[in-house]
Structures are given as structure tokens and as C-alpha cells.
Image: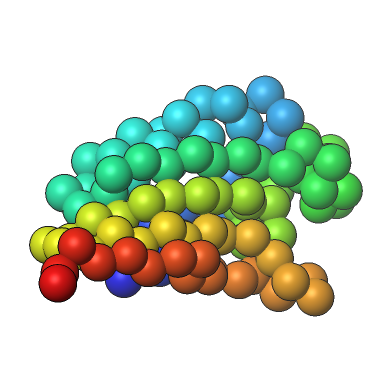
Length: 103
């Protein structure tokens, strides 16, 4: 849920080469504000970004193909590691690992 919410919160945001760093930090800050998010790292892929800019305005809309995100979510006794990336040119929100302290 946290991964999907974060993804949909920022998809469509205008982004260009001059704004990638500030948008990466904004996404990380927004993720860290979520009560269950333990850690998050965001990378907007520069090469893909430049390829996606198709007009003279110098920006494009952020989509999953531009994102590489790793995050850890902890709810109760369960920790989930998740990523946002792409596979076969489609956005992919993926659960990488689930651990539980429950015995």
C-alpha cells in the first residue's frame, strides 16, 4: 500500500534535468513522512529522462520508467522491502523481502 501510494502521489509531476535532484529529495521526504516508512532512496534515471523529453520545453512527466526506488516499510512486527522500477518497459512495484518478528 505504501509503495503504491508513493508511486501515484508523484507520477505525472513535471521533471527536467535541472529538477531531478530536488524531486528525488521531495519523494524521499514524502516517503519518510509516512508513519510506517523506515527508509527510502529515490533515483530518477538521467539517461531515460533525457530520452523522454520530446519537446523544447526541457521537461517531461515523471513515470515509472524514470524511477528507481528502494524502500523499507515496517508495520507492527513485519518489515517489507520494496522497489519501484521497470520490467519489459512497464512500471513494476515489487515486494523484495518480507520479514516478521512474530514467533
